[in-house]
Length: 379
Length: 180
Ligand SMILES: [Zn+2]
Ligand SMILES: [Zn+2]
Ligand SMILES: [Zn+2]
Ligand SMILES: [Zn+2]
Image (tube, rainbow over the protein chains, first blue to last red):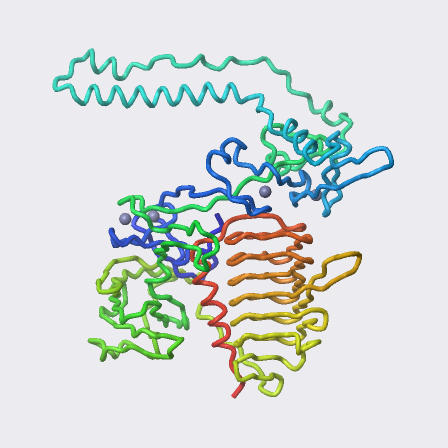
């Protein structure tokens, strides 16, 4: 997934409880835990599969059967754009084949054509949906691994229930059992340098790494052996908090709704936007903007940061209405207050500034408070 | 850093009562066919071919310098027929892009010097990278990034896209101020 976090200084990042730093845009908020979460602190679940070309939703079972690929749409092995089905008709017969409109790749030379649309799709499925030669070996490995996991769990339960441990028990629990035959060394003569040099290769025809890996089963070396590829499916994913397992983000299954989410607890909705307004020789002017619909409070703590509790008014741009609440305990820290924005001055001990922020905001009738570390990097 | 304010010369811009800011140095053909829903910014050098087919543009849509909007055509019964171009709300199209899409959803970000070919459909909350060329009839799903020549799927957008993009275009409009 593409991240919105920028790593070009000057930037302002937030530190998740796990220690990683992220931009505000990439973070989530878990209400039961009152915790800001980074993308590594959420677990993802696939809700549905869809094809990016025909936009068709696919049930999980069907997606599994087609190896997470669309059965009807194909992409060009050379430039990865969507292939069109072309009709090459002569007096004797009609021939359907795949063609790329961008790079003029054609499936005729591969022998990939059919007298009808169905025949073409079937012939490509034969060509492409066939099993990977390494599949059986991989299956043995996966089964062995699963078996080992199951055994370990069983052993764990058995020994946990035991009250007294003997040396024998310990030995049994630790003793590794040969689960799979070790890999045999194969005598293989790698080609010499001279051989490689004298090999007759048209380097324009050699596939690039991306082209090769897009077809992991065959990994063709020459482009003229690469075939039309079914388009991999994309997914809609919901995200759960890693700590309490509650949902943080849940996509809308009905795509006709205008809001794409059923639930979206993103930190951008609840945490103030922080911008640098001005960098002075030994101080920094920060801009804080309250995105929530109610008055919120912030307390900053850090090296050369005046201890303070400040309030941020809320602003409704549609009604053009500012909700205010008197003045903060120490209004002198605020350089400027305008609508839902305040600007404050903090000290600049070095180019790396760490500030702890205690943020208190309203959500409906509840007051939520949490602490987060802000990292300001100037250069 | 704090987002910068952009100042414009009041004499060079036409302002409508719905808040559209249209530069006089843009080329707009068939203005009766162009529907601006308010709070749009049309920068210098923008070309909108409303004479070919109707162009509908949603709120807070920003066209930077030298963007070309040209409705796409369909071949029906051996004739070329131009079809309505629909552009949603909070769409940002950067400098020098040529857009012939038939439909653009909400919160779409099109980078610099892109070519969006005929009959493309860009769904809500997607992004087209700088310099991308979308081949005709491409459909870009929601929450994806497309890029390259020809443009293909690259990655997914973060979930905060809806909010951040709305803020970006609204902020750009609010910081687009007349020179005092
Ligand atoms: Zn984390
Ligand atoms: Zn498909
Ligand atoms: Zn191609
Ligand atoms: Zn939680």
